[in-house]
Each structure stands twice: as structure tokens, then as C-alpha cells.
Length: 491
Image (tube, rainbow, N blue to C red; front, top):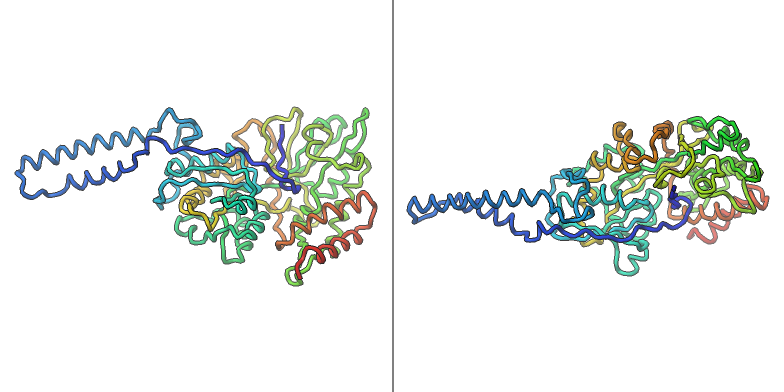
């Protein structure tokens, strides 16, 4: 079964149940290391007023105790076998990134509450890439995932220590006054952000006005197109080529949209208008004029292209557009342009493959708009030092390799790690995964706090008014622009 991340179509995301990892009993009595240090110092002291034999005897006893305690510590480091897998690094091996930073944690026991705003990190990914690397070094740091929405958690007086969000989602997190500037943390913990893909690093700087660094990116989300090979074979049509552009895809979609034995097949589910504007680099808000602007010639051209897909006879059925379920469950959708972070949990039961996301004919080599996920530390957290330990391991190559194997693309500019993508699951076995990298993420247009409500108007009002009600594109865009500037934009 495929479980799609519906964050991209504006729906809520239900997070996994909360869980907590208890501190291993091996570390319960804490002061052992202090005692060990005191013994070593005591064994090296010169004891005045004692005869030499007594002095030698005391030193010998000290050294014996040192050996015994060191052995106990070594045995303790092997792990308590009675603990569950969730309470210790999985796999019985050193967790990835366990030796990442040289800045020791001295904050004592801390429970980090984590809210996933819109990244869809699975329990397994969270355990292996966030929890294990930190707890391998600092078992006194525990984790709890909260099911509350970020705004609700803050309003309830239970704000999280850490927020996981996407680059578009960061703006609403900033609106809530949550993110701490991590510029000094990056220096203190030697976090090498220059290892990241340049497009990701540049976007982080843009979102911080070239002065602040509001999060640590940990995975990228690539646009892809998946397709049902059985449908193509049924109709004797060649599979979509790598690097197909929207004009070519439109003709292929027309060919694949048909009825056969009473079953209506649909050629393609394209991106929504918001995503196509992102991909083309078109903003919906003019920062200089402080107004919504969606009536330019380019806005109309991109909308016109999308409307041609949505008005193919047979695309709508009883006024309803196809969804991800049309592809995964009903098996009536030939192609689906979507995001790679849709969760592929098991084989869907039909033959399928993957290729690069389609692009605009006049912008070859660029796919879906740039999207990545990051960790944000709450500047009001009482456990910031513990949260920094999590931030410090995320760009470690072993941690990024773990993300890749579990189906999340690395943010590092590292071809070797990129090739490990999806190798940790049989779902992607034999799939043309490397084809998705034949195009690059499209740089995003300037963003604003008004983008989300404006885009909502475009998708919910402008698109159906044109594709279902037959209103002309320019009139539909003008109506949205006027409404946005009256009801959304604050003069």
C-alpha cells in the first residue's frame, strides 16, 4: 500500500503516537565517573606522615579499585540486554553520528518534545536518524513525539522543544515566534552546512534574510512522476520518457485518457496551480507593492497549460477530479506527478515505475519546486542544549545514509550517499530511482506570509471556476487577486 503525504494538497497530517525512551539503568547512579576521577587523583597524591609501606599499600589498593571500576564501566557500555529496541540504538551497533560533535552535553536528564508540522517523518526514521545517534552518546536525553498541532501546543502552554517542518512551512513557524537563530550553534558544534546542496543552503539564507539560520535541514523532497506499467501495456503505449516536458505529457495524457470495458482511465494527475507557479518561479505576492499579484501574462500562461490537462474529456467524473487513490487503490490513473516523500510502505499490487518530474518546455532540466525538511529549535525551550545535540548529528554522513536507505533523500551534495536512496526497502527494488535526479529542483520565487491563503483561493476558487464552470482564465485570476487584496492582505 502507498500512503501519500497529503501535506502538499493542503490537508492535515496525522502524526504517530507519542512514545518515550527511558534512561538505561546502567547510568542510573550517575556519580560513578566522579568517583573514578577522584580515585585516580587520590592514587597520585603524596601522603605526608605515612611510612613508605603504608603509602605503597594505599596506592596499590587505589589502582586495584581503578581497574575494577573501569571494568564495570566497560561492561556497562555494552548495553543492558533487557532493554527494548526503542530504548537503545537499534541493530546492536554504534548509532550513526554518535561521535559527530566534540561539544559534550552537560545539561542533565531532559525530555525533548517534538512536533512534526508537515514533514511526515515515520516512527522508524525518527528512531534511527534522530533518537539513536543522540542517545548513543547521551542516554539521559529522551524523546516524546506530540500529536498536537504546533499552534495548539503553544496555546495550551505545552510548546515543543523541537519542530520538524518544510521550507514553505517555516514561515508559519516564524509567525508563531518559535525558531531560534542557530548561527552560533552551527559554529560551536562545527556543523558544516557547506556540505549541503547549494540550492538548499541558499534557500536557508534567503529565508533568514541573509542574517539568520533558522533550522538544520535533514532531507530533501524531490518531485517525481510514478506510472502504472500495466495500464501502458494494456493500451500498447510506450512509457513516459525521462525528462518529459508538460507539452509532451499533455499529448500522452490525452492518449491514455479513455474508457475500456466500462472503466474510465485517466492519463495523468498533474501538480496543482500553486505547485506549477512555484515550479515556474512565479510569486503570488509582490513584496514591493505589498499586494497579491496573479494577473500577469505568465500567471495566465501557466494556468492555461494546467487547464488543458484538467479539461481533457474524462478527467472529471461526476464533477470530481482524480486523487492519489485513483492511482494506488483504483488503478485507473496512468501517471501521477507527485512528491518523493509519499510513503511507500509496501508493494501496491501492480507493476509500476518512477521517472523524473515533468518540466516546462522553456525551462528544461528543472522539475518540481525546491522542497526540503528541517529541524527547528524553539527559542523558548528549557532544553535547548539537549536539542542542539540533535541538530548537531543531522548532517553527519552516516545519519544521512540512514535517511537515504529509509527513503528520504539526502540534503548533502554527495553522490555516494544519494545512490543509497531507497536501498533499505524492497519496495524500490528494480525501480529507476536514479532517473529522478535527471532534473534539478526549481528555485522558489520570493515567499511571503500571504502565500498560503492566496494559493488556497487559486486552487479552490479560480481552478474550478475555469475548468468546471467555464469562466475565462483572466477573469478568474482577477477575481482571486481582488478578493485577496480585500480580505487577506493587510494594507
